[in-house]
Length: 148
Image 1 (cartoon, rainbow, N blue to C red):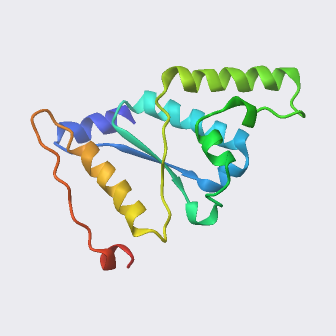
Image 2: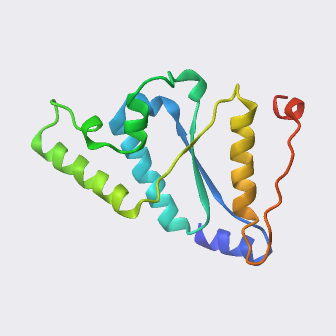
């Protein structure tokens, strides 16, 4: 993968990674933790600008107070009474790895909200334009085109 990225960059392509995590994983914190470890691994291995996106937020109850705690990796939401001692140790270790690197942050996208889609596109646009001495150009998006 690094060879492909290097080849594309050598040919003046601007590269960033976009990692999509299904919003349904927020309902099962351990699955969200697993996805976040995969995100961290991807960030470290690809070594390109990245944006991590939680998708399908239109299917999630955004008023759920636990969502923020899960996305912020609050350990009390990842450890349950059913976990044995080894699982508790593993979960704490994984949470420590994520908090130590502090690289796993998420944007959210709701397919019914054009502004959330435009925000993700704008973030990606900013990442690929991030060259020394180049000023960021914000693009305007046509809502009719985006909603198809």
